[in-house]
Amino acid sequence: MRQIFLDTETTGLSADNGDRVIEIGCVELVNRKLTGNNLHFYLNPGRDSHEEALKVHGITTEFLRDKPKFDAVVDELLAYLQGAEVIIHNAAFDVAFLNKELELVKRAPFRHHVVGVVDTLVMAKEMFPGKRNGLDALCDRLEVDNSGRTLHGALLDAELLADVYINMTRGQDALLMEVSSPQDGGIAVLQMDLRGFVLPVVAANAQELAVHEDVLMQLDKSSGGKTLWRVA
Image 1 (tube, rainbow, N blue to C red):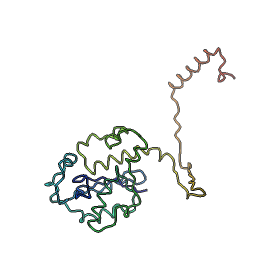
Image 2: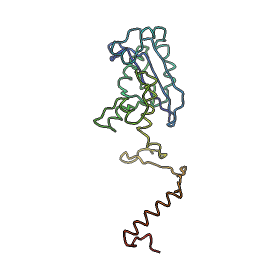
Image 3: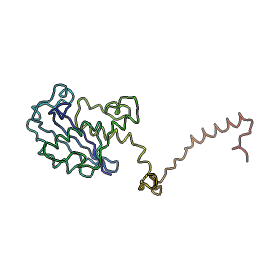
Image 4: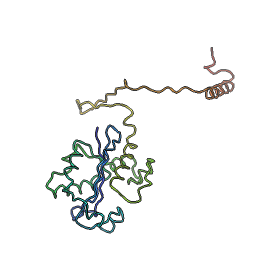
């Protein structure tokens, strides 16, 4: 499975009121392995960032002045995303901005170009109800190092999100599972192929065996010699 972790930075909070995307960061995961085949753009939005947004991302108008506009990178972006499941934290926000950018260059909405969109904020609220579920909070909770995140950045945040997602779904790669087509009543049957798994056998060392034997002797003594494992 090919998955893309995506994040954006914007000039403000409302795509409908003229705010634009200024940075897109994408990180590729294939079969739960990071590939290093990432994609990153800074974009010239043709307008200034709001003061509050600038405090969040620190990306100035001057820095973006010579960067490409969205229409110059859209083909490369859509080709990269083609056939992938896209994972976004608070997906409604990013997808709304990407939809507006696509609309302005007369392209179909974002979801038409990808297999599906997964919102890790929704996942986190289900896993950790009543708790803070921002990206920083999840990094702290799942022991993902976010010490380099002094300001928001799309590529860095996409990389952190990939680590968070892997930790949130860690149990899913313990078994190879295939879901059959739903049959009567819409019930899906899980088929687990265990033939390829070799379970490690870790033998106790001499010290551990000695400690174990001592515990057994103490239990046997406490029971007056009636422990079943001592019966010949």
